[in-house]
Length: 215
Image (tube, rainbow, N blue to C red):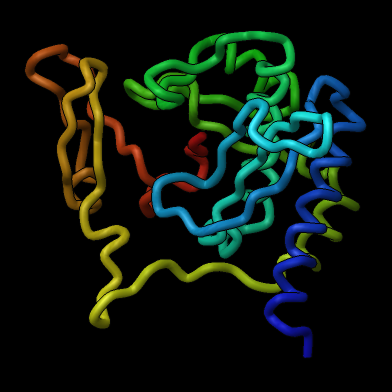
């Protein structure tokens, strides 16, 4: 049986290989160091010029360990979602605002360039990404290798026998007011801010949001 340390290195190698496949199709996606850790707030992110290797400064592609439990299509979507941010970083295109929460139309164009379908998600902009069949099927060999590599995933923090990660979801509106709401309440219907008139949108993944990738 493969040890935990070996299994985690296999996961990272699988993510590196998948990113390499994406970069071969989209040469403007920069080389990046893979960061794999726990996160209850987001499935992934792309950080520009975050790692140093000798004289080279590299970008970072972070992948949430909790997210690896999801369907392999979701994992590919995360990689493509973040690769689109990478293209934006290389080209000097400002594609997000509000500390990365809001995804603008320039991001939408970048995500569509890498083969994703993009939807607007309330006040978070064009952050809802999904991988259509045509794109998913075109990465068939990548998916097979990646699925084989993901031999473990992170279950999330636990304390005193409870799992607090998704007790309340943090939601933010356009004017940056913040509320915490039970996921079941959020699912019942839109919640509107009385000050700016915009919808509140969750800033952490909850059950409803498998296609709403965050960075």
